[in-house]
Image 1: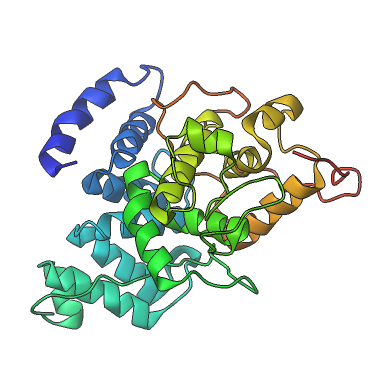
Image 2: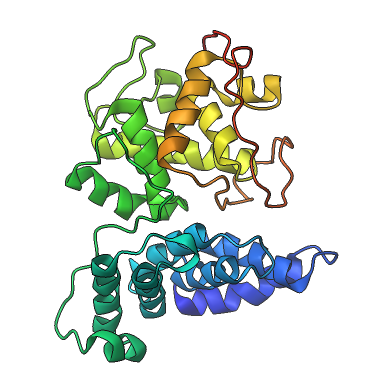
Length: 308
């Protein structure tokens, strides 16, 4: 979406937001709608709200993720902020001077004067840094993604309004980045789509990496909208089906699903993800207000065996 289109749509979306909401909350709702449609300007401005706790609970890691999404679309101010957050370790983001300088050089190459003063004129074409990893992305013993898959996800995920880091975490746990893997339940490919889900989201060849990821991202986007941005519920739905989450009004007490959600959240710690309210009517399990997701209960009772 162009900056002009975003500038035209933003006042309209603000006007359509509930009158009872505060100005900041209405602004955030409008920005989320535009950010999920790919507007770099909206992603940048939404990041500012999360960084300053303006209308939302402060979430520096989500702010950094949004800055990086906008920066990958050559939004210079966003590249500047991504660089500053990494350089200084702002808001609990891990300090990484090399990565910070890389984003600042990107901003300088895009003509950002503040970045030029910090790192000098970059000149010529500067490659976009290949990662933006706040401390919520913790790979631990799980293998990091191959460069080709990382590049595909970083390119595709923003078109579905998804954080590339969340998609990469799902792929890591689902398939270990194997394109041709088939589970004992006939889930197939990188994002382990069962035939019914593949058909539901228009995937004709689940072993084609791009098709599989598009189908998986469409489903993940749908689940995030259905569960009002609650990452844990969306992940549980991805593993066990949204019906199981509805049945138990939360994460089902299946050992496999409990382990699955815990494993992904061990890599990706965000509890809330912006979502497109126009995709599907909410299931109503989660308040539309942004709030922390309760920690998973890992007691023996909660982890009783079950099959999806």
